[in-house]
Length: 462
Ligand code: 4AD
Ligand code: MG
Image (cartoon, rainbow, N blue to C red):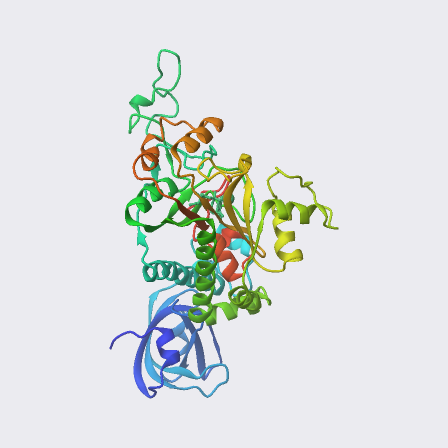
């Protein structure tokens, strides 16, 4: 007899047949005549109920069928007499595959706080909440590949260990095999990286963009989707030290087309989740955030508001709201400002463009005014920045001038400059923070709760 998933059984029209299900017990209750065993196997947010009659299963045979145990249940799939479920299993055989000491099992039936679950991150996928989040996370990852595949993009794999700082922001984790206590030193007393594994200092990548640009200048439209690492000491509900980023890069696209791509991409991902994760999203909506489904539908139905940084600063300066950080042209926007624009002023997603060059990365294309660059940030309700991107500076001289002004070492990026030396072309791209997308779609409030094993300052447990 082939195992069926709970999802398959709940959707089955084919009743009064023998079935086999395997999964983890969520609860067992009942009386001396009958016991009800509630099982989930991860295929869906829903559970299936197995009914164990006392004639077949005397009390002592079910003593190990407790919350958290793994069981295999064989029986007849029948229409349920009780309310709350359409079908149930009349059990004929129950095997405990793995018992779980009911006293010691960390996931007790009473609600456990998200903070506590973070401390038992290895077990939290067994909860309804994390089951739902992980299934939505999977669906979004699939939808991303599907979107790009349908639009003629190629998936390229960029390195995780790198010798260069793609963002020029100095937020990298060093990768080394040198002994931390007594690293070899040069005559000047500096650490001698010629003795290191790669013969030079290396780091975990902060972004695959620069390598992605090389690929776009050969394949036309590409994307990366991989882990990225930032050693920024941001202890917030929006930052991780290890997060996944999706970075499309398109030859011949300019800023306008980059914005069109970002908007269409985000809307189709949200639409996919609404269509394919309806049960999980309904659960998350009911459990945590009653406005979740409304917000997701709003995003797919309404065009994003596009405006320049300069226009945004004018709006913020004339806002009645008092900000903790004052705004003036040239300052970077804080999340309070971004959230004001999205949640209070426009009440819809916003794409901000043409930021001052001083607050953006070296590779962004300079505007004709010489003061701003063709940057774009997509800001989402409840999230703030979900996407950061730009049209790239394709002109060799202008790019190397910017690099010199920003103290970006040109010798380390000589390979990158070859794209501008040989057959350069206008191109543009952006980075979508995968966990910020999952955060938005699930309506969870902390980014640490949308990745299985979050990495943040002072936390790398598991
Ligand atoms: O704005 P960022 O730093 O842009 C880049 O890395 C560019 N190379 C992207 C590109 O143009 N190809 O990061 C892009 C996005 C942000 O908008 C945010 O969603 C996410 O990555 N992000 C983070 N997510 C979680 N934790 C962090 N510490 C993040 N830093 C950035
Ligand atoms: Mg950014």
